[in-house]
Length: 217
Image 1 (tube, rainbow, N blue to C red):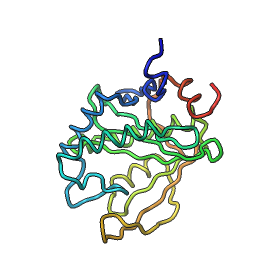
Image 2: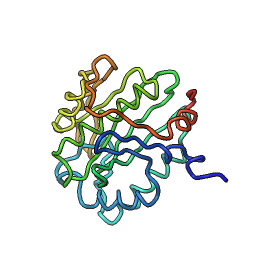
Image 3: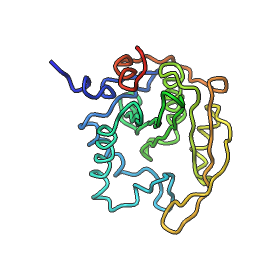
Image 4: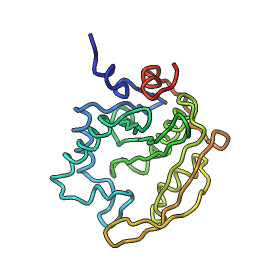
């Protein structure tokens, strides 16, 4: 009988590293993730995201979050895919970690993106989950480099990138909120400069996911 993770192999992907677990988000997880987002990710006057998706009436945020993840599932293909994993720390859902790419089979590169509930920040979880996704990309998905970016007024994200070994790769000027320009630091990481976490990765569901993105088992 066909299972849901046969249709959507990301739902069968599970990575553990010490107290961290990253896995595909089922619909029940999206409801819990929405509650976490509603509880707060950043101060109202701040905006760490390219797309200011948290700048909506609070009652719209859960539906918008779920629709975003459903669209990512529906549009998933080897030519263009977004890997969104829920992050659990000691069994508690704390946020999400993503890896987005286009033409990965040619470029072997993708960009990381993440968020953590505000009440769970400041514990070193952001660094550890970035190390996990980069180790997955390099060791299990055959990536040649990983990129990231952050607005210059987001020192926490920049600090995580530095701890993991990224190097600067230029600054661009972007529209952030309506009428607001913000400078954005681009960063790049290679296997040679990658600073790994202390825990080895245990990966389940890897073969099916590799096939889904066009890689051999």
